Structures are given as structure tokens and as C-alpha cells.
Length: 178
Image 1 (cartoon, rainbow, N blue to C red):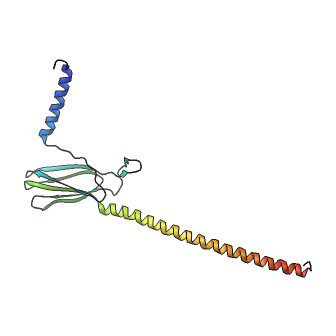
Image 2 (image 1 turned 90 degrees about the horizontal axis):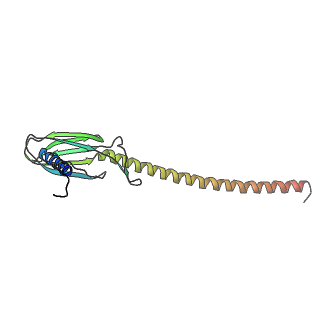
Image 3 (image 1 turned 180 degrees about the vertical axis):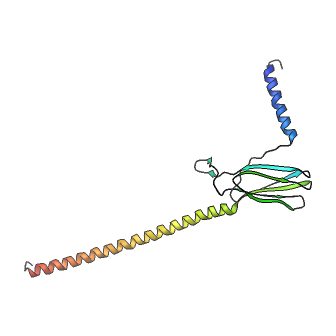
């Protein structure tokens, strides 16, 4: 301890006390990523008559820019909590950011499951696939129409050329130049 300054020891001591105070309160936090169709479940031993509060935030990940996008409307979480007997304590849809709360009535292992509101995400993904399919069909239809239009123009051009040649030939024959 000869080379350690007293101010540093006090600062380190405060951090340890803060860490111990946080551990003593029982407050814990989780940070995890979950895919659109994934479901994450946690088993937590909870005493009876204990109020559990969960704060969450959902965000979309942009793979190209490699950043989280701001919360979009329609994106949210579905939270389902089952008690040790398998009875559903909470099953509710929530928005993109917020808090869920439940009170345990029986002690033991509670299962807390979180997943994105896959119905809306599926609609979003399905809507995206629908738009892509519609765009592809429109592109193919447009391509087909352009092909037939160019064939029609070519036929009209050839028929006009044949008509002009016959007309000029009959004109010159009438004038007796040929």
C-alpha cells in the first residue's frame, strides 16, 4: 500500500460500497438481442408476493449501417410470465418501449418469456415480401409490354416501308419515269 494515494483508496472504497449496495437491493439487469421471430425465456426464482418490474426497449438493427434505428411504430414486445405451477400470470402485448409489472403469488421458479410482436413483425415482413412480389410482377409485366410494343413498332415500320415503296413505284410508273 506504500505507493497508493489515499484519495484513490477512498474512491475505490466508494465504488465497492456502491457495488455492494446494488447487490444488496436485489436489482439485476439483462441486456440481450432478440431476432424478429425469436423468443427468449428466463427462469427466475421469485418469493411469493413479490412485485417484479421489467423495463425494456425494442429497436431494429440496420445491417448495412450497423446501427440501431429509432423505434418504429408497430414494433413491440409480447411478455408472458408463468408461475411455478405453469399458470399464466401475465400475457400481454406492449409497445416499443416501456415497463411491465407483475406480482408473484406463489414462491418458486417463474418463467418470463419475451418475444417481438411477431404478428406485426410478420405483417411487416409479409408486407415487405408482398411489395417485393408485386414490384417483381409489375416489372415483368412492363418488360413484356415493352417487348410487344417494340415488335408492333417494327411490324408497323416494315409495313409502312412496303406501302411507301409500292406507292412510289406506282407514282413513278404513272409519271413514266421508270
